[in-house]
Image 1 (cartoon, helix red, strand yellow):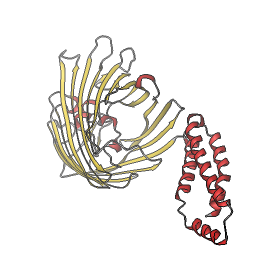
Image 2 (image 1 turned 120 degrees about the vertical axis):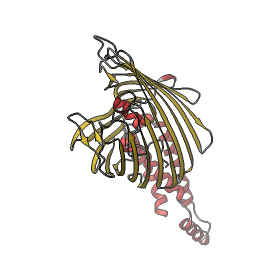
Image 3 (image 1 turned 180 degrees about the vertical axis):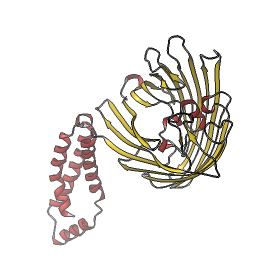
Image 4 (image 1 turned 90 degrees about the horizontal axis):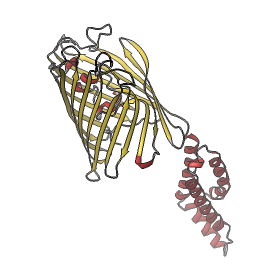
Length: 432
């Protein structure tokens, strides 16, 4: 114990020298100097007390015994904080790397079949099989004191083969004046809530039917720029200038006729345990080339989220979204309309367990007007840690169209999601 106290002053110059060499020391100079100064003063006081001459031999023995039994936790804590600050400075510009694997097995009851991309060369049956459907490599880092960067490379299974794609790659500028924040690059667009989540981050194993009927199986990813403003009240406004690359809703992929996105989201912290969010989204773009005709697409959305979280062991999440699309067509000249939505309830009864139910409805199946389908599903998720999740579930689905397989389908599914590397970014519904 005495050796630790006497070594503290000697260790302080080492901490200070390492901190001075840190690439981000200029950004945290004031905070770091304050921590080291406080540590230096504490160490000098301990050393001075230790070196003061005792009044007599009995006093020396009493002081020695007191030092041996004294609670030295504060000194340990200060040392730990100092070294943690140094380590964070040295690593702040190194990318945090996370690898995420997501496997899904489906088992259909009876002879029913579920087919993706029906009637195309990419047609594939997705039931009664297990696949590692996606692997993601997630890189995140501070570019400098003004910008952060995210790069996500995805390996996706397509017909038994794996294709490498850039899922996301963007820079975020968070120090703009007037409370503004900009995002530039390729990203999942903030149209509603569920579209922003990657497949492995969904509270369920599959995306809502209404979302995939409009934007496709991958949702809406695009290249462009977003500008967000966090108002003095709990309101965030976002406008997006996008390339418009999302067949069949948008089909220009031309910045001469870009797509525009607008979103407003209101946050309300009702109490320490209750959170409420309501949002509205709008997307406008062309679904045909400017010549010979401009065919417009309008997509509308509204979402609501309620979360009750009394502690890290229990939570309840209720969420729902509705979508609408109006799309002009060159064949008839009349607009094509589609609507859909979903709602789900998820309960966390224990720290590692989540269970829930979801209802889906859409009248835009296979991106065709008046093609109805609905589904009811339930699931149970178990986390060993934030790095490993097991999920089982069941889905009953009914549809009018038979092009994508049988009209009625009952499916059991098993999902395995694993993560290694840096701690993953957790979705909004997860309780930690």
